[in-house]
Length: 130
Image (cartoon, rainbow, N blue to C red; front, side, top):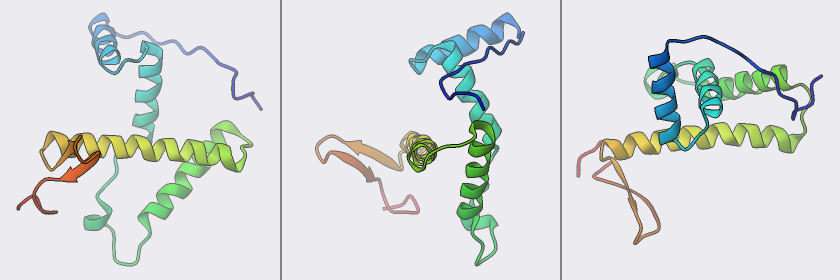
């Protein structure tokens, strides 16, 4: 089993325009190009999620299955982890998803950040209308 601090090099060859595009995006996110590529690969491996409210039959447990799948993936890739290490990795996934959802809701003016109130607030109703 590899130590969690050990690193391995992965090389790939891509068109220069793509490398430039990735570097620009990494710069916007204040990330190194290596961090950016790693994050994008991990995000891509998670796949696309369907809206469980609209697509899952009543009584199903889509989030439980997602958690189980993610837990198995983490253990398969990293081996033995303590409770705290598992919580840290899974919480990071949740924080990433929360940030993505908040960014999307802000870009469509459904949610806004209020410095005065010290947090996020809904614009209009849940369905987007006042």
